[in-house]
Image (cartoon, rainbow, N blue to C red; front, top):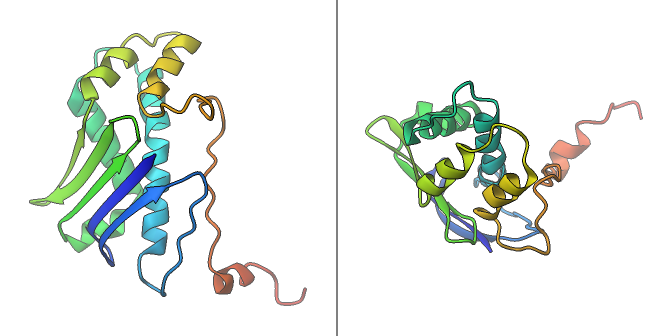
Length: 174
């Protein structure tokens, strides 16, 4: 089971949430629902991001800092308003397989840690052609549920905005 732990991120002081196949986030205005939804999206997309980074890389010699820098850039692209705020935060996403990513902001630096970077790099360094066995081995690091496991599916995350925002997307003359 996936789990996200959020400390001091935007308006969220502390949250620890089990992420299931269908998760609904409800709360008051400006309480951090959008931040939380974007965080789950970011962490669930992270294995795909890392795989693409390795598959399309010019050289197959990876060091942990390469991945940490890639993750930091992706994170800042999605959450640049948080980094401008300069508040220290900590985020942990557990994939349910013993693997987790931790992203935290301390001393004006985004830091990225992973419980299993060495194993991830070992598999990714072998990927030079599309090999379904390697792809499955890589994605099993993040998802042990064989019944629902399919790394070739499109992303299944969906964000449905609040009712007031949802009705604003329709023209007023309809």
